Length: 187
Image (cartoon, rainbow, N blue to C red; front, side, top):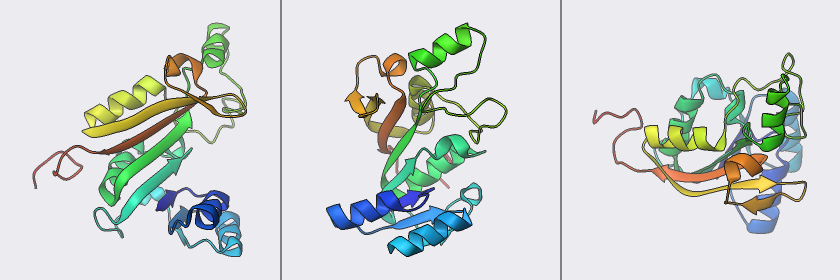
């Protein structure tokens, strides 16, 4: 497993201890890298904006992007890289189309919620996306979405009906649909 933007490594530590998972984290923040090391999590300090060139195609069974994609300048490239280095990708992100967000915009304000906790002027999010937007991006990049659902509430209850409206967090698992390289050519 490869966890892109693994933060302090708590999730990878949990998977290693409770699911006998083996993997690496990728993290840029110095304090988070030190925390990963302290937890016994293998971590590489890399800038995801530079891609995943050091990994061969299908090097990992699963590549995670848990609340990472919205922080990247070139989200589409990183999505293709995730599909290239992993046999399966898992992406989560705050769903901007969640009904409280829509209500905030209708009232003339950018949303500030538990899942989007920053003001418009100090957010680390470079991008905002909706459940439906990601499905379109996956199709454009010839990715097969094998599971798509949303998470609702503090207990993260999964839902699949009306996820674009009701889910605060979008979750997708996907694989590449072609044997072509991820740039869409047969080079």
